[in-house]
Image (cartoon, rainbow, N blue to C red; front, top):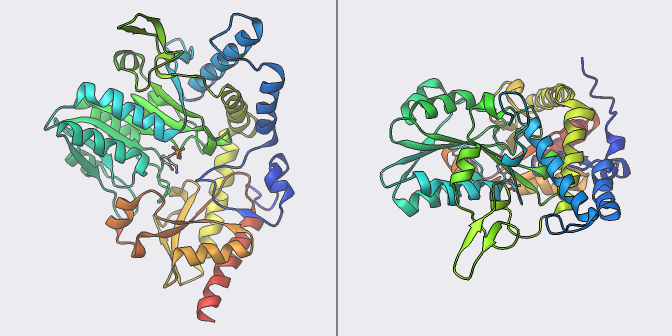
Length: 416
Ligand code: PMP
């Protein structure tokens, strides 16, 4: 059994180690960073800083190679490999974040396959990042945005998939894990239905990559997006993986330096994938640090330990909340269906008040619409707002105890 009272990880995270008074329960918004990631940025600037791709001197070559290595590492991590198991490093595109990755697909790829009358299918629990780009893409060509809706336990059922994905479907874009309900969606089944109808599958992995091993081939993804900052890496680095033939055929979203093969007065020839999509100077130090972050997450800690601890922490948290009859959970009853995320409301008290009062005792939770307004509207959540506690493997039972004490404090403040 996992001992959530012990915490072998906190010492690796300077912000947590130096601030024992903080109970950080907002990792779904952005993770804390271990020292090795902070050190990696500095290491890059101290030992290999040069503009990658531009130079022919060895320092610049070293920077270029460091980026290439992280591409290969990410490809291997998410199962983007050829039949012989070699990582497809060049099909990993660096962006600024998940939002930019999804915009790239919606703006560059979608217009190549969408026409009036077609359907794009997403789910009602999508983050605005995987929703607004599709609204825009549909509006542009006169396509229709169709929503998969879960049952009362957060499950998108086989019947729902069969009812919504059909011959008119051209693209299905689905979050692997919901940042509000915490559920993992049946991406494999959704992708199979999409492919059976000749549609393409885009997976928003922003909330899965920090918590679980990802295999884009098993998922059936054609595109997969995530952000480094939710997976212990720096802010400002996103990833878009795509199937090579799709990346190859789609036009760039941004143009300029470093993304061309040759330029004449009136024309330009694009560089091959991935450079075609990476105009301008990259944040090479942060890409290097992303490699260190993902290595720490997947190898030093390991997804098995991550999941074991997070499941135990969520189970403990929900068990404590269940004792408070004034707390309503938004999402499934079964803690095992929550992947690091528990959303809730304290009856009659605005979520902003809950979060502010909790902050006074050092408990960091999120309150608001969580960039999922259509979901909260559909669920009929009062004020279109809720509270969200989200855990990572570096949390412990003391964090949960501080959180539960904070909730009781909130209740007695208003009802004392
Ligand atoms: N999708 C999901 C499911 C998310 O939780 C988030 C971040 N809250 C995003 C997309 C957007 O990520 P970013 O802000 O890094 O672009």
